[in-house]
Image (cartoon, rainbow, N blue to C red; front, side, top):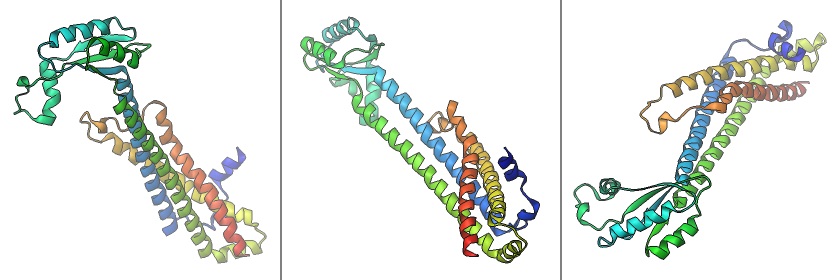
Length: 294
């Protein structure tokens, strides 16, 4: 607690070593704000993409589509038989045969509205909703094929697996961006601390003559740059949250972008993480520079 209090309050004598204003001060605050802004946006996009992908995957996992052969003469009999098999299959919660209008609406994006779909032999589609525990897809496919040759059961695994893989990659990219942002903040603060120490070499020399130790001098740099990075990160987080709130809400993906539930911990953690990175980066830079000036 005493160390935290010293970091916040500081030592007025030691603080004179670090200029309260100037290019390095403004640069530290500005870069910290920008990096925090980018970190929040990257996290929001990554977490939102993961949530949307997980929800879609869950919906696909519980739904399946049965495609009956396009045989107009036996269509009604095949549909009745298929529904009978599905209704007696454990793990099937409900089934529904799509209407001709629904099937035509599914084909219109591919063939347009000018094609007379009502005159073509379109396979009958049946929507299947799984129960808990779910049915056995392979067993159901075998049972349906035995009764209705040419029937196809699509459990959407072809769509679900790439979707989950893509969501995992997006999350990985998001965390990689966060690490790069943290490294950039550390590099910037290290350069700023080196520049400030070099500019105040004469003051450092005088402090040493009156008995100040390097740890005492370095502490002033650590405190000043840690607080600058933390305050800049707070400003960046606030700005990012405002931007996320004013994104267009058209019911699409942008309506999902943001934080939800436990994800709100990240806007609180980013300033703290920025301050921690600044603390260790400044401490290492100050000690190394002071040793060079010995």
